[in-house]
Length: 240
Image (cartoon, rainbow, N blue to C red; front, side, top):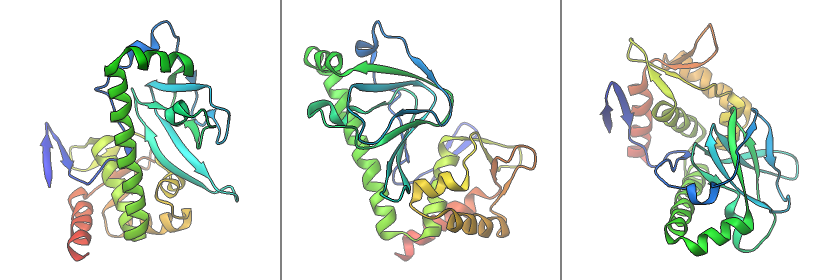
């Protein structure tokens, strides 16, 4: 289903790949704190690091990833503006079970764990916000499991591209869409659990089909035929 939002067409899919909680109020836990700036690829915490803080993304974008014994990375999800992360260890004090890395220039609050817990006890609305965030993260992880278990490689790449159209693109005069962030083949591989070579082959296939191209000036992906890309997902659903 396509839903018009102003001049931008929204393509309906099961779930977004990004953690977006812009409507939630976290002001009670950031009062008196100053956010710290992080540059792209700068790590906030690493997997199995001792738990000390709950983090809030004031601006920018942060990815949460897990690493296997051989160093392979799998992105769990992307935290957008106004999203909390690192809170999983809040109630048992265990080390972080993933790594957090800034994707873009980001301003991040580091909220001491004891302060966050104290605010939770004082503020039922804050506790509800944490529960809503946990529910959304569970949906994101469930979607990732479904993708890896039941959908082929081409579908997974197409699914990421449609998500990017919905959330990080601008519509051009030609009715095509240009991404507003640079997403590399390796980024898509980390998000889908595929190899970079597999993603590159699928992107080349979409280029040959006239579905997308890369801007020759800045390298950002342009989806030339978004309807055809969405139809591909639609047809796959109907066939399975």
